[in-house]
Length: 365
Image (cartoon, rainbow, N blue to C red; front, side, top):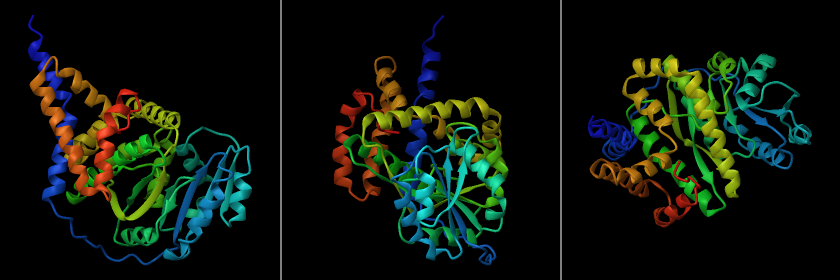
């Protein structure tokens, strides 16, 4: 039996993510931002809830709450809520000293999704009249004007919002991982947004209408709650709107082992979501059209470095197909230089990327 044709089909499938990202690059270059369709203006309600799930964040949470307090004037009547989740340090007291509302959770399921669900149930009266719930990490920072941008989008009719997440890296490997996140937002997400397609959630800087989050939260049970929410929202036909004017600063792990643990946790969560939500994924792909295809398929064809490595190996078996995929990969990353603030630094770090890839750092998302 000649297996060569079957092998070619498999090889072609393995460059599918390259093709999809190459198409997003073309859309990004050739399209223009969509003009906003403003619905009937919603009267301001009672502000938003800035929600932080914190586990043993003493020494960090106080400064974070203090920085968020400086932004509250952008959205009057907004409040900060910190859930001290199974903490064994002074997280709760530190947050209280900075005038945050604090809920103490002493047991229950592990994970941010479980914490969100617990708080929504236990403190319904605190969020039910609010315009939105903004989820941030214990070490996140909001740039000035971010809350105002989110507020305006919800007034215009948005249901779920994702802010731009700006990585803050203190190491070379962290910078490489950060560049990958920036490119995925400046190229992939901006292209999706220009087509009116949903963008993926990123774990921090995501804001929801309270009723929508409360409906979905009881189902959250994996280590990748943002990925769970992506699938559930897509299958329900609820779009996620990109708000680039809202910028969340997101510190990256300084040490390589911290980045590796973060990567392993995400991969574990990815497998959990695949096993638990395959029906919802199929429903989203069937009902959601191109926007769902470019969202769900690319979310699960990760990490990108794995598929790039496969394409390198395929050079020795199916050179034409593999080189086609690698050429599209290279075009994607080179195109990123047009959309970053420091293109020279980006290109220099990109040149050094193979050294880190050989060390198994997996920096390219």
